[in-house]
Image (tube, rainbow, N blue to C red; front, side, top):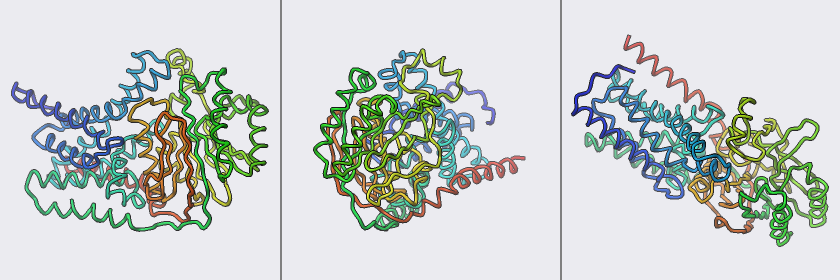
Length: 503
């Protein structure tokens, strides 16, 4: 960063005003996402942010403005992490607020660095550098999806599941759509600043192209349909792990399930079965499997898988029917399901009380579950936030299933944001997504990312639909393999070019 010259009072006030405007703009950006879904804001707000930083601010002050913008963005976007830690993890307000604040400050570095790199390159490339902004944003969102196992929540592209830009998802995925939003934001900025009416071509052509792409079928329907029921048990998080409530919890799911024996597949959400698998093997799992064989159907349920010999626990899903197949969650939540350094376990266990918070990740290669000739791509909760995790089951998987427990988030925006993320996975893969949750939103999502049916939140409900699997892959299946290079190499090349010109 370049050293900033001393500021006089007028310049200082001018900078403070711009920083405040950046904070307001960042705070408004979450409105582009579900449940508000005002998707044009994902284009308008970055364009207005460019108006804030395009003046003679130093590179350092552009970084600070971008950081404050990011703090507003993520403070209002992921505030619900505090609810999870305080309301359900029993952390004190200081601990919950501190962890949430630290995460927000770290996530805010992505937009800060985006605008900083642009400002640095602008000194040598002029207005041409504006068209590098989409590349910087793309690269830093991709990096955000990997650091500390990744936190790509609120990637800008997720806001576009209901817009014409969703047509690009089977080609370039969520990060590519984020870059498209920035590309259009640059065009809008030039239109507003310089009255460059030629930019209208970009602002019209990109949504029109996206709409045309929405009409393309990249995969083919599988011949045989499947009747599926999903049960939303609506078990309050505060009673979910109590031993004295285990029978009541099981009875809730079994009572709902017994109405749908004619379904080919019945899905219960994440950790729906109370207790770990060793504890309930004889009392629950074996009797369940016997009944399911008699009824001629199959259940997939979330459960804590346990390996008594090794003392390991897994966040798992089990398929019960004529056969039993296990899936162990691969991508665990940092500090929620595992601790990266064992000594931290003792430190945080006194501050946060989350049951089964030191789990073992499942192996990368696992057997796909299959029902009536349909191969199922299974994921548990946080895993559907990552395209790379979902793609592990392709091209073999014909249908996608995600088991979640969004009760951790209470009545916040998080369950709706999570639903939007699941829609993006359907768009990228052109697969039906069956999303089974404890307290909502449980939903069937078609291969174009549209919600076919969904439950209300905080109600015990069941959904039944006849779904059709898909075969083949979208272009994104191949693009995803190279997007890391596309994210990092242009970033390095541009920075080296700027450094060379500066030298």
